Length: 112
Image (tube, rainbow, N blue to C red; front, side):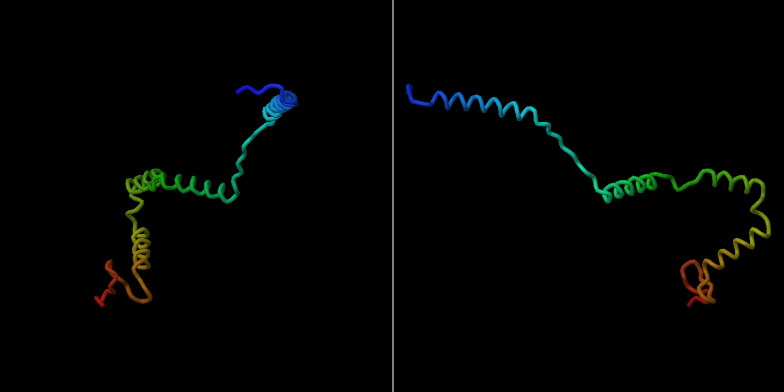
């Protein structure tokens, strides 16, 4: 069906087309940007996780300490009475509770 000679329809269509083009031009000129803000807590949490991973992946064995101990053994530094006394003192402290000395199972030396 073709409708002709409706008064004002051409003017309305022309206005609509003109406005449509203006709106498209306006929309293309609008600069759109996204942004993200990370909270201080999230940054701290990420930093803590980073350090936890570093610690988890770091060896507990310190090669420098092992090398030093091997050299002391080789030189006989551990085979001295002073060293034996220190070891005995530390072991006694480790396995003493109050005035009782414990064996390795946690029982006192009387077996109680």
